[in-house]
Length: 337
Image (tube, rainbow, N blue to C red; front, side, top):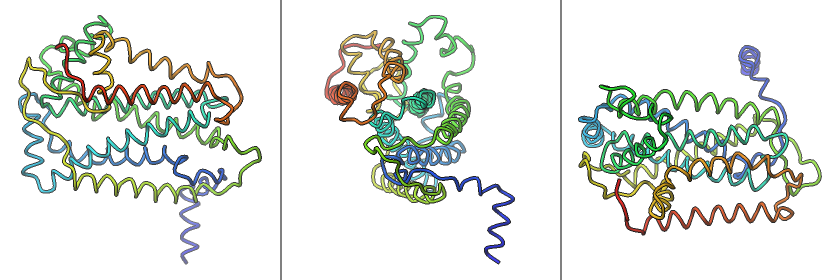
């Protein structure tokens, strides 16, 4: 009976399409970081839908609505904690995933397009993180928005849609909120689908150090592994939400600049302290650098020991950002917007 029901479901839902073979090394943490990132993003979307029921995207009520959620709504503090820590975990797993892809040269022919899609997804996640920071509308949020608006002014007509002047009478916070809960997630989901399609189309990248072909296994077995990994990610998020409350300040004091950005953005705070135009110049340069990697690195070698220049670039990149984040955390502000 059970086998008959299983066959009916397989035939009706097309589940047999999931039974294709993939390399056995897929069932490892380093090759499942993308799946863990997707798990964290799923938690973000679901918790965000619930949070949206309590949030008021108005400059005069946004911060108060979050304090009401945290202080008055049953388990509201836990819900917000899950959303916050899901974003933190996603940042870490996404970064490690990008490092793994570079380390194993998985961006090389024929996977260049999927590398570019991955960079696009990373930019979307960063934008979601930024907009999520702004809509809580405390002092940190206000100052982050002030820096963003300064950048928008510097790029002239291209920055106009990102300012209050684009839609007079509509609070910019409201537009940022709508982008955060609708436009950005929709684009992200479409790109995630495209990313997964190309992973299947080009197949999982081989182990660079293995000259012989690795053993195969059915994709359904990998799905079971990803489910366990996803459950672990969710458990970690819940534990963090239970033990460490995410930051939430009071309503901002306009014209004051006293905070530092979240650690994901503090590196550019450090660069800004050196040279203010870094706010405008550094992000596009980094994006261009990442996008150019598969087209500049045409060497067919994939094993890391035989790619000394690529490994030097990777280590240098990691050390540079680590030092900038640490320096940004300990340095004092030298200017004001």
